Amino acid sequence: MKLSSLLVPLGVLFLSGCAGGLNSDTSNIEIRALNMALANKAQELKLTYLDTYSILLANTGKPLVFFYQPDGEHLSELGYLRWADASLVPYIKYYKVTCAGMVGDSITRRVNAVQIPNPTRDATWDDLLAIKAYNLGVDGETSADVLQRLHQLVQPDIDCYFVMIGNNDLHAAVPISQVIANVETIARYLKTQSGKPVVIQAVMPLNR
Image: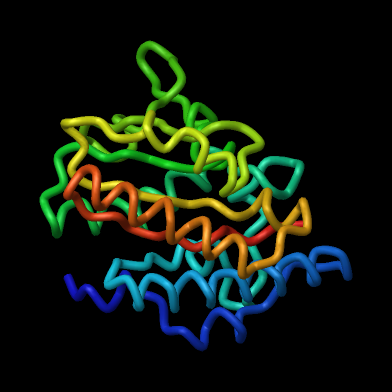
């Protein structure tokens, strides 16, 4: 597997299409701008950046509706499976990650949208990634909220942190520059305190 397939071509963030409707278009323009800044910051910090925005798009550049819950923001079962299979699992296998720390907001937390059969139960990140994983997502959190609980995130057995945050910041009209500063603080803290890799993930598009 080529690592370049995991990393974002920087130009695609601005060239990708948006969901239908003026409000959605405006929101996804903001998301792509944030993702460009996140990609640049990851490069500056020498961290891996995963393009988890484009994996939810059709060839037309629009988000695929079946990857989303009816609210157009949270992921459906198929959306979580796509996230895991197209982005996270290839990285985990390549780098032989054995325990993941999944840091984020409700998009990260609500992996229980996936149902495991026989007997039916809510899935966890352990199920989707086939390794031990800590679900460190909290509904409604902004990057500033994550800063307030950094000490809770570091666990001795986590050997890679996957960070996706910023969606709620944009909803709250937090400037992109502030989001990036907060993400840098989060990444530096996790890397310094744990000594383990930190992966920055793109904020996902809206389908509204």
